Image (cartoon, rainbow, N blue to C red; front, side):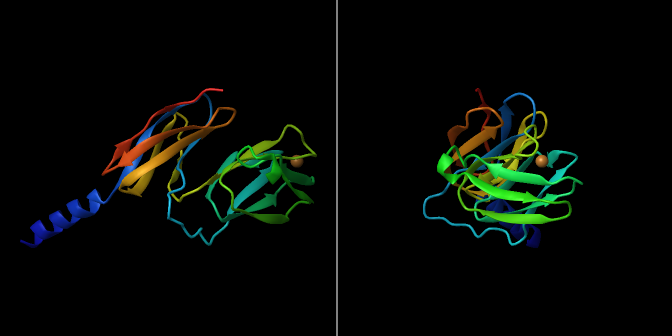
Length: 189
Ligand SMILES: [Cu+2]
């Protein structure tokens, strides 16, 4: 009897949300997939800041994904000074910003409120590049090297889901979650 109740309860819970899984075909490197803004819904950002390091003349990791409203801490772990600036956010050049230049061991923070891709550059080392991807919702995932992704526990509903990959056009498509759902993307330049 109790087991029956438990099984029904689990079945019930699993029906109210699902995972969105799929594959992004976009070439070399990781892609990011996220659920776009949901009308009437806001999500508190996580309290803990994520860290983007500058180490061995590289942004590490190459891509950091955060929910809108999140703070990212930019650390310099190299012996040389690094700068960080971005020419745009989500393609909007009005949101260009220069965080400045700082020495080894120091960090500076920035709160990203506007969703979109933020291309990070260093004006000391033109070959350096990295990305902060600001997701409008907490429902996002980075693909593995083969392009597979899983966005876990998305509440049932109809959404627009977008896929981003460095150097490619963002692609969006409607996805209905009613239990598990699937969405594949093929990105191009
Ligand atoms: Cu640099």
